[in-house]
Image 1 (cartoon, one colour):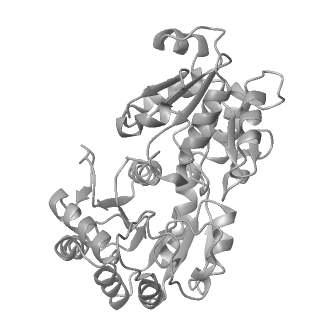
Image 2 (spheres, rainbow, N blue to C red; image 1 turned 90 degrees about the vertical axis):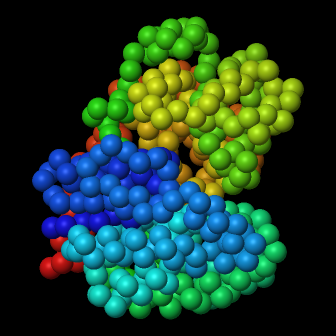
Length: 406
């Protein structure tokens, strides 16, 4: 069985790490598999192909933002992708995040549909069935056709024009033309959303995201991790991942306000901080902003050192960072958005109403207390090992691939 995965990135970000985990596991099990991606660093790994380049991506981003049409550029890059597909002739194409200024939707789907290629498509957000947005929040126009969009300023951004109705119609035509498709989502919430969309004709199943719980994300010695990074044994530590905090969806304002509320009680460590967001830290002396890191080992050590991990996103699918934290034995506080309540059920964390600042701060304060009743350490990690391992995820995907080919 020959499998080709397509995604915007490889091993950079939540969805991209899922792609990498599936690829490595399939290789380890002797499957012939490939990854084609558009953006980011080229890894030194087997059967990886980057088909786009930075110049074309920047130009595509400019055109997309100016014209308000996303996914209709990158013709040269998509021709390279199709040529690669013709070379390797995959039995199954496994698509992930297709938006990101790196791909031409009509070219790819006209090729896939005309060749009747079996496809698995994992949704990491809602973009596939909306006019353009990644998360629709309270809007339900995506069910019948978009237009008069309230989120033109959100990612993927449009500076001037609203072509969401056009893109919704064309996506519906392109994405529903082929017969051999199975849609996968990591959360029951997103599975239910797909079943309300124009893609409801296809089977849609839930496969929980898996992470490397054996070699990377597991509980480290808490005191040794704190000593290594300069934190005291008795300090209360709140951890967050600050990548993308310029996007309002990420909820940066809530964790920053919580940091102010916890002044003198806890330190708030934010990994992936971007200096362009420094103005957010005004009058906030207990935040430790750290740059992004490519080291999964370092992340695992910080997860292990923290008392609580925070996920302030106002819209979320099934956050890989929350899984990583829990796999290292640290409970999570998050808003009740998307698939987050599913992740934090059963004592793994605390969920509060999205946007409720007071409830969020109170939940973080409660989670800092060892007597909160939340699962921690090995007990919490074992839950994630049972439900979210890479091997379990890969096995489920292999079953889905085979069902398509049967």
